[in-house]
Image 1 (cartoon, rainbow, N blue to C red):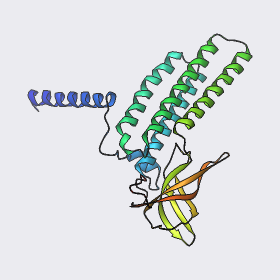
Image 2: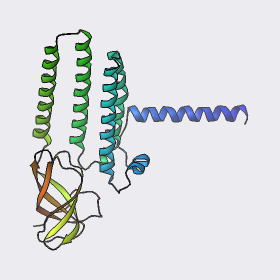
Image 3: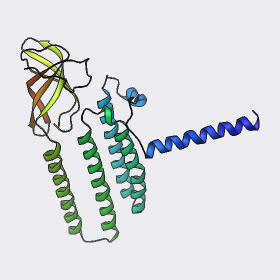
Image 4: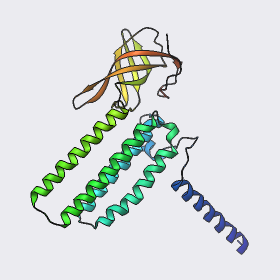
Length: 248
């Protein structure tokens, strides 16, 4: 390899690195979904792009929570918490913006993860600052009460802004008077992804998108209980649940 070719390859690497950094810090929505190479190895069962994105966000947030907790345990300087946030928040922003076209519903996920992550950062920073002043025990109790109130207010605001008592699903099996529906992870309706059996209604076919009434159950989240609308569209199994055309 001569000097000219070597310098050309170095230039290509530098240019490629600059493009990747620009894309990371100034992302734009992608037209192609990510391949989820590593997540597919961890979760053998078939999942939709939306479910994989939800898992990626959950794992990133859980990792961020654990690392913050470890930093507090080892009594690291609060600047370490800020440094960790400087890494985490750009990654969160990149994941949300880059893949916004592949969420079944984008806005609730964006609001929830930005909001809960900001609250988490504030909680840990506040605790680190309080601990540094070594106050009496009742200061800690008051702070925990304050944190609980903040979380409850955030939960109430999220539910009032994005919460709903319905979700969408795809008909996968009709068995007599019962029908098995696949439902995406739906944060706005507080429904976990999976298959649910509900009573059948008319005009059902495998692949049809349906609208489901959900019911909140203590410690279980919301559960689909019945079909309230059927849409005139066919979908492949576990594909998008966005309805196209309603039945009369």
